[in-house]
Length: 395
Image 1 (spheres, rainbow, N blue to C red):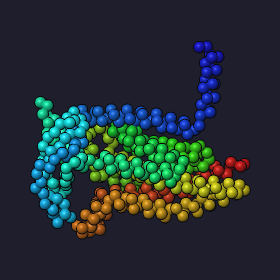
Image 2 (image 1 turned 120 degrees about the vertical axis):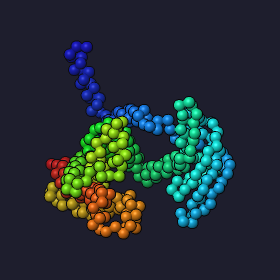
Image 3 (image 1 turned 180 degrees about the horizontal axis):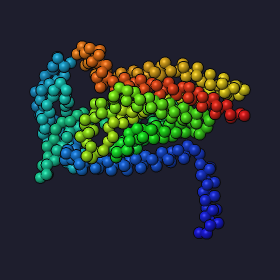
């Protein structure tokens, strides 16, 4: 192929690409990123299984075919939970021992309380020895069907009520979860900075979701810029707050467990606090950014003569109205996730000076405040971007 033919080929390819809708390009790029992340994740899981001490353990579904004995009784102190011991006959439903039947004991305590009934499905841990023999123990209820059904009902409701927008929202949600699982986690597990990983995922998720929802236009570009800048401010504020309070990823609950996995997964634990805050702030920042950008766009459509300052003022008014409820949403989300911890701490009657200086409380406060900080800063930023960008559409 000579130079002229190459130029003609490239020119023809470029013309074809121009005809492709931006949403299709976004979907293709999203699929490419997810496939690459899935490959990385599979590699991480494989390496973990090779290096893990429990590599001979498998968790599989099994069916309780018969209750051979039931020596349990109701315990009023634990809310009427059944305590004691059962002897179960189970049939393994998957894995290398699929179809095999065996009898196993089931010990029920106040915390590990899996009360089995005939015909129900449970998850069992199968430990295989070097000589090929194996033992099984009750691990938990098999929740695959109810959890998947709940997710399916949610997605169906989203599509039915939202129509085409609901379907696009579902695609955006699937991409967001996929990017977290198949891209961010493998990046962090492979030793890449958690903060850098979270920032890249936040930018990618913001761009793809807004393009899926509304294409590439002045409104979505304004919302993208406001979201990314707001989340970036949240990350900077979180880093500064962590330095001032001497708190980072090492002060979080799971830090010790992650350090024990350092040989197989060189996670940079220190940056996990800020990375978590970036992801926490992303949803609220996206929500308020698209709301303000859409409002400014509508104001401009109704009255194209409005000046950028007028559009900015209108966007700020919309943002202020939404700010109170959005701030409550984030604070309540963090409080709800730590409800058990709060009850435990207050039940001990810990003095305020001790309470406020515990690592767990300090981390929760930084997470809640800095996530709100990013959302609040998104309001003037997206109002500024949208007022300047959208007002140019009729000039």
